[in-house]
Amino acid sequence: MAELDGQLVGALLWEAPRSDSRPAAIWHAVKRATQRIASRMPGGRGIAHTLAVEVYRPKAPHWYLHDIASSPRARGKGVGSALLEHRLGIIDANTVTIASLEATSPGSRRLYERFGFEAVGTATTGTDTESTIMVRRPD
View (cartoon, rainbow, N blue to C red):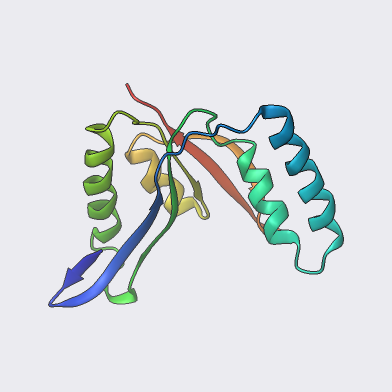
């Protein structure tokens, strides 16, 4: 979280790396079944989107940035960059240094590219919009 004059102006939410001990065949069967169910449900687009993003996420344990935000008064003042720089410094000092995320706008994509993230695919987020899945690997 970031503060300015004692007020919260930015935050990000990361998912820590996890090891997946489920057998691959079972995991893929569950994903396929979930996709079929989601496609038939009203509002199932969120689940379908999550599964589409999963295809591009690294198979190895990695950090995943769920969300980053700054208040309107803090936008354009480097809050997002400061939050990313701080957490990526911690990640780089860790044993797991791979990170992934979704860029939902051209501006966010440029921000993430400055921190070494590269586009690996796209997923539909709405009727006419897509998000770019990005990965940052160690040097």
